[in-house]
Amino acid sequence: MEQLKIGIVGAGGIATGRHIPTFQQFQEVSVSHIYDIDAEKAKIVATEFGIEYVCDTYEEMLESVDAVIITTPNKFHAPYTIQALNRDVHVMCEKPMALSSEECDAMIGAEERSEGVLHIAYHYRFMKEAIAVKQIIDQGVIGEPLVINVKAMRRRKVPGWGVFTNKELQGGGSLIDYGCHLLDLAMWLAGDVKPIEVNGTTYNRLSKDNHDIVNEWGNFDASTFEVDDHVTAYVKFDNQASMLFETSWAANIEHDEEFISIAGTKGGINVFDMKYNTASEGLMTTTTIDYVQEKNTFEYLQASNFIRTILHDSVLKVKSVEARNVSKIIEAIYLSSAQNKAIKIQNS
Image (tube, rainbow, N blue to C red; front, side, top):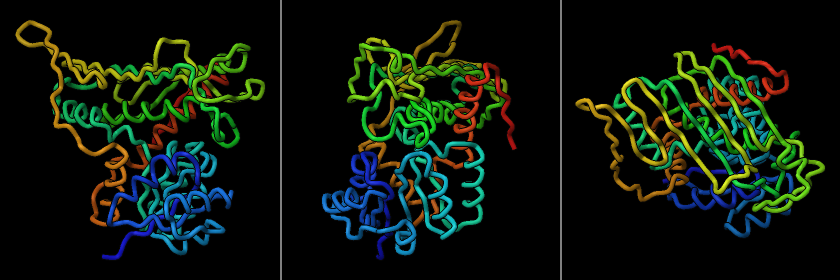
């Protein structure tokens, strides 16, 4: 069987730490090409992982591969994705989908015209807790989801490497880099919900104004820190559901915290505690979710879904229109904070 040829776009940590070693586990594919604007960096990674071809240009790569994995700074997600889809090349693009809803629209338009598929790498959907909780919610155990509470909190872990604190290249900080994962997961678990109004506030004083900075993830220059390190928001959805949301890179808390609770008309569920609460015979009952332990990692499951969709007409677990809704919320939070007012979101 001829292997699916995959090209890696970007030779940074997300490529070397996740995507390359994961895709190299599949016999159906060959991670055959790599491209980075830093050619020497691409050559080093190619040597380390046995990648045969180091491309001088992105266009050169697109002439030779069946699919690309885009791991570049966020600014380049949209143009690289559109360019690949216009060549009928399949795309897995790292989150967030893009820097604006307009860019997301352009990516979806390219996808609709292309024979290629587009997957946005919101990998939390592939975690064992998420899969088990999704089944419980879809079975109607908690009824209709109404109130969603989300926390994505890191204790003093501003990424001190790469371009994570560069607003021009990344578009933002803790929200667009980290909080987006739990935004996506919560909305997916809650079902087909579309955001209609957002009220948000962003901060950067924990990192910018603190002259005695403690940071567990490397050093950064506080004087040039220009992205958000803490964000709060309230989101309304089209089905009367709502979300309380908070995320941080630099919280002054005891330990990291990832939390999603969903209160429904019949009960409530806590995603990472794997428990749900329902009323039975006049009593509230707490049930621990029992599930079959998944032997494969979420990275493997995500890659498998992408490969199966290309080779066997499976269905992508992360649809581009859903990823666009996440970007709409992110965009609205930043705008709401800048204008100090609630932002209405239009849905087509």
